[in-house]
Amino acid sequence: SAVISQKPSRDICQRGTSLTIQCQVDSQVTMMFWYRQQPGQSLTLIATANQGSEATYESGFVIDKFPISRPNLTFSTLTVSNMSPEDSSIYLCSVAGSGQGYGYTFGSGTRLTVV
Amino acid sequence: QQPVQSPQAVILREGEDAVINCSSSKALYSVHWYRQKHGEAPVFLMILLKGGEQKGHEKISASFNEKKQQSSLYLTASQLSYSGTYFCGTEISGNDMRFGAGTRLTVKP
Image 1 (tube, rainbow over the protein chains, first blue to last red):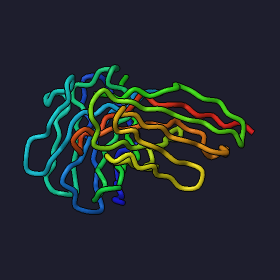
Image 2: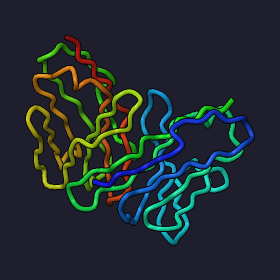
Image 3: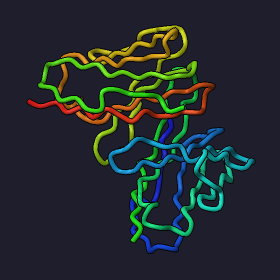
Image 4: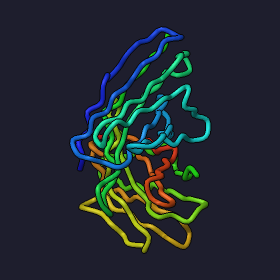
């Protein structure tokens, strides 16, 4: 399965600022997924990022707030813009397995606290 | 599209069994099961594809009832290392994973 390097692992940010989270995969993948997980809760899909096209956002998430870049098949970034305390959460990137029978692999997550 | 998962929490003694259920209102392409320990990323356990096949290894297995769009995860003779939060994830068409609310499993000595 793929190995994902995600950074930063955690950050404390001032409200109104932006944070960019990076994910590097050790193999080429078509799709990368960005999830948000609030403490003690489930994972919510933010968007799906394909290389060479605009990301597809889920209901409740917009590009102005969570711009995503996908410059190549091994890398993606998620920016959390104009942050407020409600954005405090864990953000995870993920890729699907390379064939039938393989699950998703997750990055180690970014724990974001907005003060 | 989020699957419904139950129970919310389970407390076991070592050696006891548990069943976690997951259901969807839509026809599924696949069901995944993941375990997440505190402060860590979810880890893939197994996937069940259309066809009702039961999968598993050693003391953790799962089934998928395609007619009912329901899956169950079976934990047999639980060990302390089984503690964590279990999530089912469902795909309707592939590459569209949605996760259930999670089941917090605590195994006590």
